Structure formats: structure tokens, C-alpha cells
Length: 217
Image 1 (cartoon, helix red, strand yellow):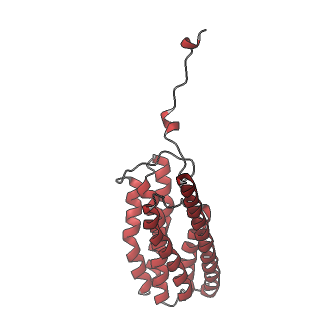
Image 2: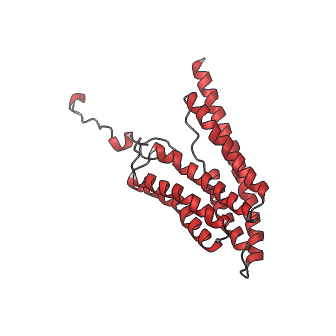
Image 3: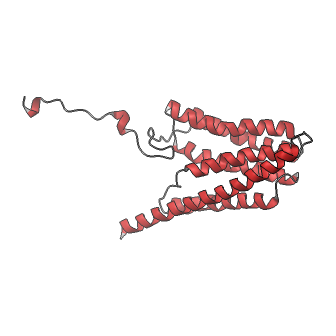
């Protein structure tokens, strides 16, 4: 059989659309804005002030419940994005931003009630401010913010678990003392993980800057 009669495999559009991204090898990242996962993230952002207000005013029962629901949507929007093929660049930016805002707002609300040590809250907010302020600088150099890494997600999960546990420790339930000890342990563990993830992000940015400088030389 001649080469001209051989059937050559055509490129698979689905495979061509795949590429690296914050979620690992995944479907093509789109520029869509109106997606279901983005709507879930938006609802999370809108409910954050309500969570903070409930906790800051001592309404711990409702505050813990709503914070738990809001925190769980972090998994929901990511799952929906992968399941429905609606992974978008906006979602990749909003999702970690929503996580950081939730942690910061709840931590500051609990500082008002004396539940969270102010030192821990300052450390959490300071790290996020540094990273957020660095985004515009990266964009000016044509560099996208680094992908969310597993350590960063793990730190977020630990902190989102620590804050409600600490809130339970501030109530009059029988396990309040144990909850406060456990909550403080989780809180400071999460802070350390948060900063370790921040160091990795900075390293990723420096490597990209180095590659860009090397390509330009």
C-alpha cells in the first residue's frame, strides 16, 4: 500500500485542547465569565461579609454553620469546573482569592471576639496582601500568577477547619476547652503551611522571571 493511501490519524480536538493549568493536566482554560462554577464562587464572595458579621457579633451558631457552607463551596466550584469542562481563567483567579478573603475576614471577625490571637490574623492578612499586591507587577511583565499548589490548598483547608473549631472553643459546650487547644494547634500549623506555600509561590515567580530574562538575552 502506498504512503498516499495510508490513513493518517487526525489530531484529536479534545487532546489538542488539553494543557497544563492550575488543576494539573486539564481541559483547555477558557476566557468565559458566565459559568456555573464562577457563579458559585461569586455567591461565596457575597456571603463572606455575612459570615464575618455573624461571628464578630457573637452569633457563633449561625456564624459557624454559614462559614462551613461557604467554605465547602471551595470544593464545589472546582469540581463543577472540571466535571462540566468550564475551567476558566477568571475562575482560576477568583477561587484562590475567595479562599484568602474568607480566611482573612473570618479571622479578623474572631479577633474582635478574642477567639483568634491577633498575631495569627496579622500574619495571615500580611501574606495575602503581599501576594495580591504582587499580581499587578507580574501582569506588567507579562507573567501570569503562579498556579495553586497542593501545599497552598492544604493550608487553606487546615485554616478553614481551625477557625470553626476555635469558635466552638469560645462557646460553653462541654468540649470547649479541648476545641480551643485543637483549634490553636491547627491555626498555627495552618499559618506555617500558609507561609511555606507563599515561599514556593515566590520561588515559582522568580524562576519564571529568570526564564523570561534568559529568553530575552
